[in-house]
Length: 484
Ligand code: ADP
Image (cartoon, rainbow, N blue to C red; front, side, top):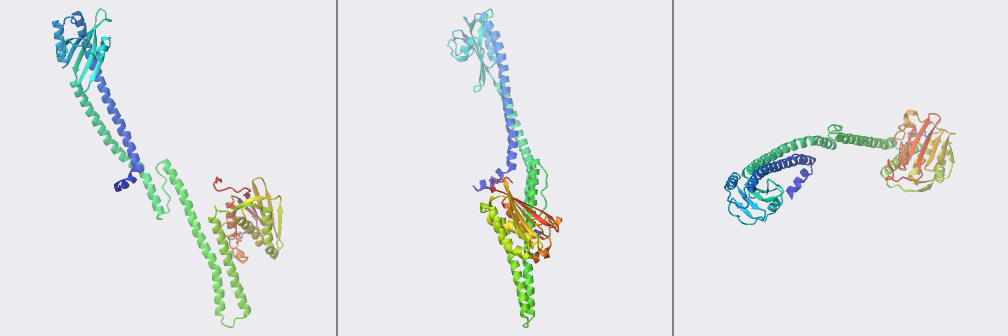
């Protein structure tokens, strides 16, 4: 059992299968060919033997008829010939008449007896018959004895039994040649099987080794794209996959370092503020004390909002599969969001305008989708100027709903447009920080829209304003139905 367990991986290996295939391809055909060769030789030798016997028997049969031997078996010349032939063939000759009675048996054992053997009966009807008795090492040929003047008259049958000693010796010789050919083919096939299986498996083995090194973190190098076309494809795909994993790992590391930095900043400020109060001793004026405490509270709020945003982001990252999808009246939802943001807009002296082109019902996760749209509108307010506006419009066709959030704010420089959806990216860090931005809002929005298989696009002109266009399918596409 233990040995079998140890052998199992070897027996299941690609190399073993290739070696086995080569062995089978080498050995089976050579055995078949050797066998066919021996069989062909045997048949050829037998048929030439039979031909020689039958032509000899034919001559004798003519003489038997013309000499009247069938009626009187004492004809000396025929008897001499029968004896001589028997000696040459190291066998036996029988002359049988048309009534199946043995007229002459050179072994003098069957004289006068009746022979009932299929081949003799058939030869009595004019057929030539031959039988190879491998067990007794002889070939038995029966030929009809015909009248030379009228070949349609069959007077009897001549049976010749010839010992096939020399034929068998030859057969033995050829059989041993066959065995030698078989053995040589086994040895050659084994050598070829070992050499080729090694050659075929080497690139796969090298590839596995490189992947193992990559897994152990010994190298970030790409897999070598060499060997067979199929393996090259595997290596290319693997490299692409490893590359994307590498990028994911890099962005994860970057994210962690950004998070640490962002979380540390409010803490550092709080420490500085607290240390300042402490160093001032007992005579700190109440106003100054209150101002510092206010600043500390602001920093705590900031830390809380970063943590809240991070939590939203993480929740979205891992809950792609468990969205709480339900049909939602989008007109009402956007109205509600605007109502909630109205106080902030009024504070900033920004006008909020909503325009609905039709009633829209869409299958979404209400909480996550509200967060996405709120972030866009809130940004429109935050990065705006007093007296400006944020215009939200809602439209739909038979497949999608379209939401546009347009503001008359400061705009985003062209070179920043590609990065605004990245985590912690802010165009103007100090300004964003001043107005309470975390740099996570748009990343959350994009995640939420993606989860609904939607799209978000941005266009902006610095000093004039920014427009975000969102498109989401009206009917939620379940992940397994979504081909992308
Ligand atoms: P934040 O919390 O800093 O607002 P966001 O991810 O929401 O983070 O936005 C990223 C950056 O994109 C912001 O810091 C800001 O510089 C820029 N931005 C986003 N929306 C607007 C907008 N409507 N107008 C101008 N700039 C914007």
